[in-house]
Length: 152
Image (tube, rainbow, N blue to C red; front, side):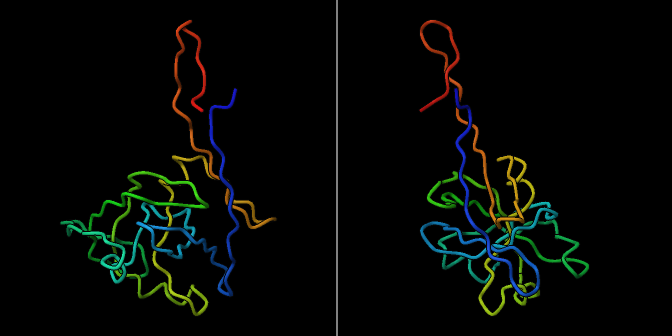
């Protein structure tokens, strides 16, 4: 009985050693750095309007991104997609990411996929094959006989 849906996708390694994936947010293709040390997933404030996302500025500021403080916005990403799999209501914050653009190897970086996403989906980064594997737990159903079964 399978109790998790597994999705795998390749990531690119840039000249600076950063791992980058392509994803879709609200139907728009974005490039995200895989950042297992980030305490949140982040979208660059410069691109959120193009993605159809509204932000609400937070009273808190983010720290640890190469400077003392960054103004942070709270945003709700309704449709986040990786390798054809949709992840509903994925949590992101918005920050100015001008300082990470060099990691893109000449292509824009739209954000960072942080540790809360990796923990929630039991993600595995395989550096031998440059593959990100995500295990999405399926809802558990109880049939009429009282037995557990995985959702289709």
